[in-house]
Length: 372
Ligand SMILES: [Zn+2]
Image (tube, rainbow, N blue to C red; front, top):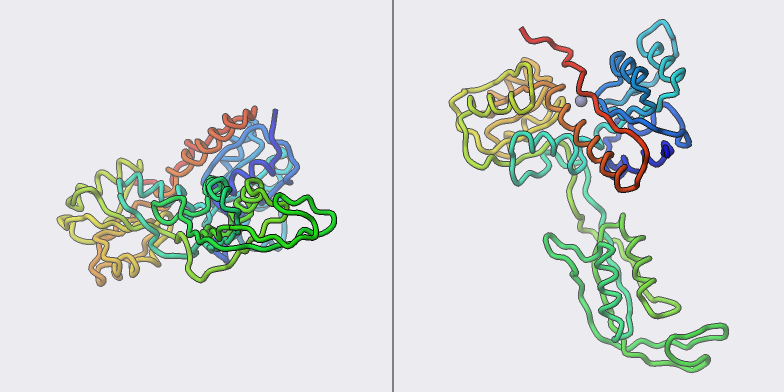
C-alpha cells in the first residue's frame, strides 16, 4: 500500500517542524500535491540533475531534499535553462519534491545534532537560539477520589515535565460548588440542588503544542460531565531551539588530532584549518553548511574550535582575531550525514505503520569541489 504525500509531510513535520524554519527560508512541499500517492522516497541534499536521473531510473516518486528546490521567486519557467529543465523532468515523471531546510538544521536530531554526534560532542546546546517553546499552565478541579487517575492520564499525555522530572503538579484541597440544571446527568448530586464537593485544584505545566492532547486525555479520565479547567499562557519559555551547537569533547585533543578524526568521520575530501594546530581543543562549536556568521558567537561562548563550511578569507581573519580556531570541513561534508538519519527515521515509521513503501537516500552525489 502506497501512502499519500500528506502522510509523508506529517512524518516530516515530526522530524523537522515547519515553525522552526527561519523566516527567510522556503520549506515544505515544492512540487506536487498532498493527495499524490507515494511509493518510493529518496532523501538528498540537493535536487540536482544527477538526483533526478537516479530517481527516474529507480522509480522514485518523492524526493525529500535539505536544500529548498525553489528558493528565490521564479519569474519564468524556461525549459532551456537548468532549473526549468529539471522542473519539466520532475513534472513529466510525476515526482513530488519536499524540502526541509533550516527547520531540519534547527530540529533535535537534525543536521546539527547529527554533525555534533559525528564529532563526538557531548552536552550540546544550540549556538544561536532562534526559537523557544511556548508553555501553558493547566489548572483543573477534580473530586478527591479521582485525582490520581486524572494526574496519571495528563502525565501520560506529556504534561508536567520540568527538566528531568516528570509528573510535576501542585495540588491544593478546596471546596467546589455546582447546581445540576435540567437535562444534566450529574456524576455527583441531584438536579436543582446546590452541591458542595471536596475537590483538588491540580496545576501543571506543558508545551503549548501538546495542550490539545493533554486536555483530551484529562477529559477522558475526569468523571465529571462538565470539567472545570483553565489553560493559561505563561511568560517563561520551554526548550530552546537554534542553529549550530556547542558542546564538549570527552577529553581534550590536539587540534591536529581532531582535524584528522573529523575528516575521517565526515568523509571529507578536504578540510581547511585556521589557527595553531597545536592548540588543545575541548569546547567545540559547530554549524552545519555555512556558519561563518556565528564565529563571533562561538568565540564569545568560549569554544576552542568552530567547525563549519563555506569559510571566506575575511571570516578566517575574524576567527584569528577572536582567538578561536576554525575548521572548514565543507558545506557538503557537514550536511551529508543527516540524510541517512532522516531515511532511517522514515524507514522506522514505515515499519511501524506497515507502509508498503521504499526509502533510500543519496549516497552517490559528490561534493561540487574536487580536492587536488
Ligand atoms: Zn546547506
